[in-house]
Length: 176
Length: 195
Image 1 (tube, one colour):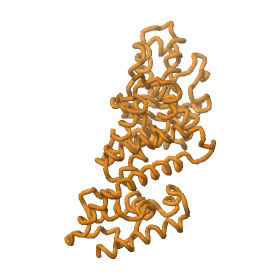
Image 2 (cartoon, one colour):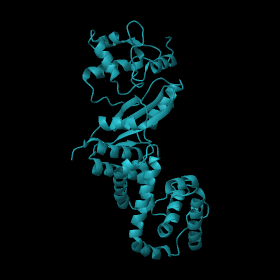
Image 3 (cartoon, chains in turn purple, blue):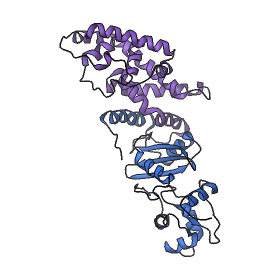
Image 4 (cartoon, helix red, strand yellow):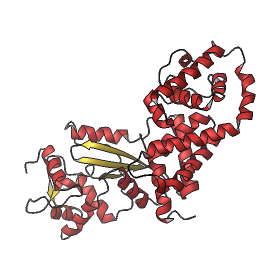
């Protein structure tokens, strides 16, 4: 494979250089599995590259990539719905400590939490309806305010707030 | 080089490097870049490899800078990074007038021995002073190669850190500068040279 496949591969490289790291983090946090996130990241940039000619000049490239990545992650999760159901049993285990963000809706309260902590709560998060799950993950892990969540997912800030609120309400019922 | 290189950052970067390797064939050591968009001399682009700073350029924007990096380093992934904060802090101190020297390691590989010699002599010119193209050529061992010395400075990959703005024509006029003569004059005055 040569590194100089003309301008076509350069357009993809440019997208990856500017947005790759941010989207890698976004996907790793949404799917919580690095191998899956690896595939989804490559799918995202291939799709974006294929559709690049349809991106209007002056439109927000970053928000557009976030939407493609989020959709790729949601599609993946839907396809794996049966497997995530198995995690439900784990979520019911009684000796699980609730993470602080469950009680205190501050952006970024769950930043830096590893997969080992609060596994059961995150497993339950994985089973929430798509928009609630993504909104909550962006809020808790990515420290997004509601405007930013709306920006990344599409929709309004009020809608984002409602989704986070609904997600927290469900989780609180089960983990407090 | 990467003080905030946490496990999570490393995991993110691994994903990006895999994507680069699979989708574009770029699998060498990554080139990290950062931007400084509000300096007194305009928009600056910085890029570093594992052994030091490779580029410090006056740029028109992020896209043209990244496109240049992709062309300069055709086998390597290029990634926007927070890891260049040490050199950015040094540059902020420089622009604030608090310190005019740099500890940042530079990587001048890819240049000819003469170019490296000229740039090496340029680094020895302290802030507040200047030299001329012909004096520099003499110090680099080729006293009649003032023009070649000028060309070597023109190709300086790390402006400001290798202070090619401290080199003037023999008649005291500014000569040329990649960032434009206005930037060259600003830098010299900032360092205390009376123009």
